[in-house]
Length: 400
Image (cartoon, rainbow, N blue to C red):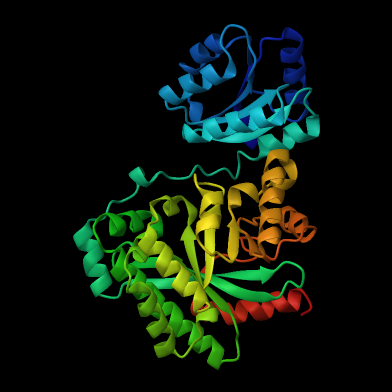
């Protein structure tokens, strides 16, 4: 039995001619288990009798009895475990919004196609089911207590990984982003989404941040001693900037490590900026005066981007990965990306594109005026000792 024979495809479309055409097209590309339904109600009844983990639903949006959005809500209520591919004559922005709605409902989405459907594009979209890995919700992961986190900080169980950043035009490695990991003695590597919120909620974020900063500053100096000049970015919670002493702490820490403030980028997540106060504005402005770089992270995903650019002297803007990955296939993403890029140029800021996941993303980015790129296509986060060997390989591959 082939892999395609293991997949059940349910086509939901209220146009009889389109139903027959899709069934014929699916047969031509090797999918022989195809069920067609002319309404969402019929589709829901059919799903009651099958194992939906191996099911792909090809779903029309604009149907008379039950539209595709209503159908998606019913899928979410029954905790559908398969995949959905949207097929619609609606414009791209509507299709993209429904795609995001599907993912918000924790349903695996293979994306969307415009009708009439191209056979080659249909085949490519359906192939995505092989690699698709739904993101695990934090509620399904092991939960840790504040006391466990407090002990971990005291026992120095946190380590920094580093993800390279490269100049888009020259491809030269110019910096790294420091990403904290909890090296749990029993559970192994624990990612930030399982402990940062605990630290912020229970007043531990300052201790955790200082441990990360100390390790990053020490590593920055070690690289400099070996002849490697990299600007090191560190994620800082907005909560840290509520302390007037934080600026002096950072200045003393750089001096003690033997590095310059200009060697460091402080990244502040944009969605957290809404809580900024006069104190945080004072601290951030002092840091810029002393030549730390300030980066507004995940730009465009929060609620106060433009006002914060007016209020705080950021000199770097990180364009969120949701506007970068697969940008070539999404007109809306391109518009937002280009607008963000134009903003950085007008304000004299450096632009960093996150989420460069494949060669298509990279190729597109190199056709733009973006300054810096970061993402899995370039490199995954890695331990500090792996950075120098990786740079040698990267530069050899790019003839630097």
